[in-house]
Structures are given as structure tokens and as C-alpha cells.
Image (cartoon, rainbow, N blue to C red; front, side):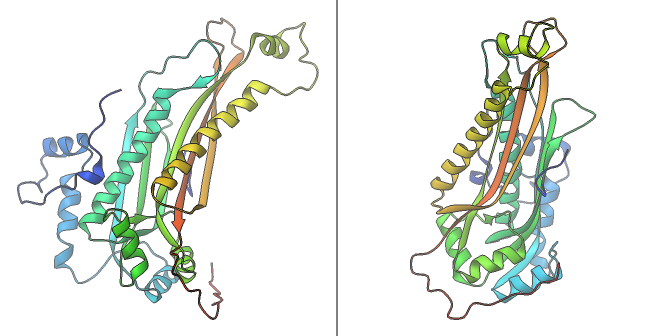
Length: 317
């Protein structure tokens, strides 16, 4: 179920745990791979590939011709493809009694899988000495054949900036590569207008909206008013509550990064239905609204002077 063009103790944050690259570390030992993943780090195979970059005179990328040409024209040189992924199992989520409320276990699973995947992408970008990751492709979803198993994957091209804007943004981000949801064309247009991405922001939320006894009777009782049209207010409110939670978290993340705004906004919502807790009826009594947001936070230097003549681009799709 792809989207976005696209309770255990947490491991240390990946961005603070860039691994050292001794020969003993870079092995194919399955135990070493397992230990690396448990601590939020990269598997040895990825480390070996990235450490060999200095021996190569060529680069790899998933950029289109237009993206490559435009990025080169604004001083961005591709280094290699980088990726991050995490497959995560959702723990037991008891259905709450007592009305509508967030489902914390499910929400945490989605947010943690995204954090792990993006953290591993940041580690690969750091080992490649990249200033930014562009042209990202993002998928997140659940496995059809396995209940409660989710995946978050992100793949993009690590680039080195020969000009100041992204290099400065990287220094302001504590020397972490700037990751965006932007295509090469979109990033070119931003930089041409003095707008600089400051990073990826995202959030997920799962909110359970339960029907009141009155609404349940309206919908399903043979003596109710199910013969006429009416709004199911509890479900409408559940959608808004789920969306409000992710918007609040994304805005908080952007503000903490010093952003002036958010662009390239991707919002996806899905639902699951449940029987009313404590009811023997097969009728739907509750719906969970799962909301995901992923976007790029941006800023604009105060000393930026706009170009004297605006360039007009004609880019074939």
C-alpha cells in the first residue's frame, strides 16, 4: 500500500551515531548486521559500499537528464545513491474504552519506522560527505500478507554543493545533509530564488473515532433514523483530530529547524473499521483514521538579493 509519490526502549538517535569504518567493522557477519540494525545503524554491506567511494572516479544517481543538468548548473555535483529503510512490527494495540482517542502504539510504530529509515539515509549521506539528498523517492505502507507489519523506505541522490546556500544550511543543521522531498527541478527553482531547504519534516497519527450509543442506534437500529441522510459527527471529528495531530507535530519540527515555511506538502489518510468495543454486533462501531504528512521545510536568508532578471524554464516532462 504505497503512498507519497509516496514499547521498547528506543535506540540512540542515528544522527548521533555515525559508525566508525575500521576493517573489522565492515564485514558480512549476520550477527554484526543484526547488532547494527538494533542500534539504528547501517548494515556492514552498506558501509563497505560507501567506504569505496573515494576509490571511484565516477558517480551513481537516479536523476533524470533534466534534473542532472539543472543541478549541475546551480553548483550541485552528484556523488552516489543513498537509501534508508525500516520494516517495523506494530505491537499489541488494545482498543480503548471510553470514547474517541489516539492509538499510541500504532502512532509510535509509524513514527519510529520513519525515524529509523531517515536516520539511516542520513548516515549514508554523512559517509558520502554529502551536503544534501535530492530527487528522493519515498514509500510507506503495510504488507498485505502480514498484519501489523509496516515499512518506510527512502532513496535519493547524495550531492555535494559547490556554492554557499546548501553548505551553509548543512552547517546550521549540525553538519547533517539536507534531505528534501523535492525533485531536481524544484530544488533548482528554489535556489535560483534564494530559498533554501532546511530538511525533511514528517509525522504520523492514528486516531480512533468511536460512535456514541445514540449514533450507533441511529445507524443500525430498525427503529432508528437510518432511513434518512445524516452526518456521522464522531467520524468527521476523528478525521480532523488525526489531521490536527500530524499538522501540529510537523509545524513543531519545522520551527525547531529554524524554517520559515513548509512546501511540497504530502498528506495521506487511510481508515480501518472496528466493531464497537464490548459489543457483540458485527456493525461498525469505530473507525481509526491514520494520517501521514511528509514535506520540506524551507527558509530564506535575510541578505538574499533577488536576481535582476527572472529565468523562465521550459522543461519537458
